Image (tube, rainbow, N blue to C red; front, side, top):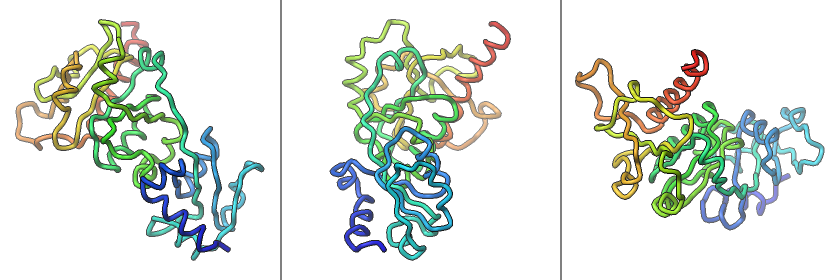
Length: 260
């Protein structure tokens, strides 16, 4: 039976302040908890209903069986789903070699937790290992973000830095590509895209800020269809990120297939 103190502690992790103090975050739901169990993330404890017991496959996991009523008391979901895990925050470091030789995403003051979670899931799908966020971006361990990643949080490393300072001090090679999406950019369907570099995506309402825009050396535009027709003013940032990632990977697959 869960104690009042345990329930109070788990509920306290809904707040960023308490997550940061304890270096713990919450993962909920059958699929996501299974992904975490299979990953290299360190689990502090798993709470699960008796219907889910066969899914606990590691003997060294700290676990506790709870009833459905108890699960509701510690869950942030309207309909709790059999399992909740308390997970230790990983201590990721930015690997300069990875950044210079792979494709990575930079998020400039992204605010919406759902957008961040979806972008992490998108990055995972397209084999992007690193996302670099501004310090004012949504918290990756916000339960809404974690939920939206659908387990991708176990594979994609999310870093928080002062982006302007980071880009100023990185000393990238002169031919290193830093991409950004702009309404006055080049049509990305007609642009040769690299398989390494940074893709900067901006704030939901303001786009890429001026102090970050100056680092962009390849401005891209996602064309609407048909061109020059009246459409929405812009795309949702997570949708735009998915399109951009697809175009980068499509170009790579095309060049490998046809030896371009």
